[in-house]
Each structure stands twice: as C-alpha cells, then as structure tokens.
Length: 160
View 1 (cartoon, rainbow, N blue to C red):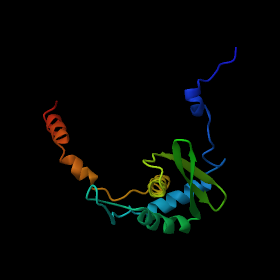
View 2 (cartoon, rainbow, N blue to C red):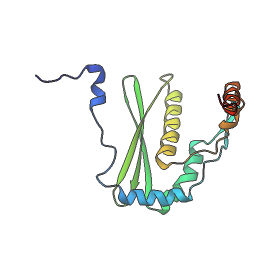
View 3 (cartoon, helix red, strand yellow):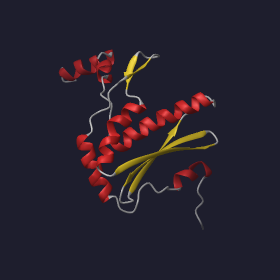
View 4 (tube, rainbow, N blue to C red):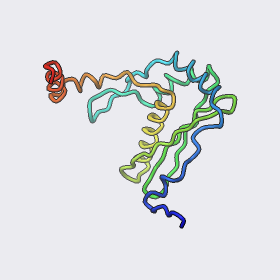
C-alpha cells in the first residue's frame, strides 16, 4: 500500500535546490572575502526602540567590495504565495557556482509601505546571513543588565 503524505506536511516533503552541484570555487572565494570583511556598523537609528542598527546599505557597503574582489556577486528577489512572503538571496561565483537561501518573512499589512519594508528587512537579513557578515552588536550589553541574567550569573558563581 502506498503511503500518503498529510496535506499539512506536504511542503516539508518538497526540497528546493539550494546550491549548484559543486561549490568548491565559491567556498574558496567566500572564505577569502570573509577574511577581509568587517562587521557592518550601526549607522541608523530605530526610533521605536531608540537603538542603532546596520541598515541594508551599510551591509552592502561592508560586503560587496570584498565579494566582488573574489569573483562573487549577489542577487536578491522576492516571491509570494497566499499568506506568505519570501525573500531569496543568491550568492554567485564567476565560475557559475551558486548557493541560495530563501527567507519567509511576515507581512503586517498588505500595503506598499509594509511590503517595501518587509523586502528591505528580508534583503538585509538574507545578505548578512549568506555572506556571514554581522553588525557590530551591543545588544549583549542590554541583556547583561537584565535581572534574569544577573540572577543566572550570580547562581553560577555560587555553583548552583
């Protein structure tokens, strides 16, 4: 008897190709580029949280010169299905080798502004992830002031 796949798990059974057959040249070039990349600086301010962040342009400035130097380029696009929105990032090597990552993004409202914001967030997250670039992070400082973290640290110093 043939096994049936429940509908709710159907999309888990389909696997999308995420890389070319070989990625050795891409991997070697990415390793060289990453050795020269620095983190993306927090040049923008989020007025809602009064915190700094590295915007998409800063992540591009921090990564593209190094990627280009080693024959790498990036393509980003988007796609949607009813109730779902995706941003896809592809890292390409001049040899034709490639890898890609597809990020499912939430959309708060179906307006041009909301979709544009979602695309920008997705592109920033996707580019940062696929190149291995991070923003200079001070979020650890805010967490270290958290009372739960202080209690955890205190208990661990006491051997609890």
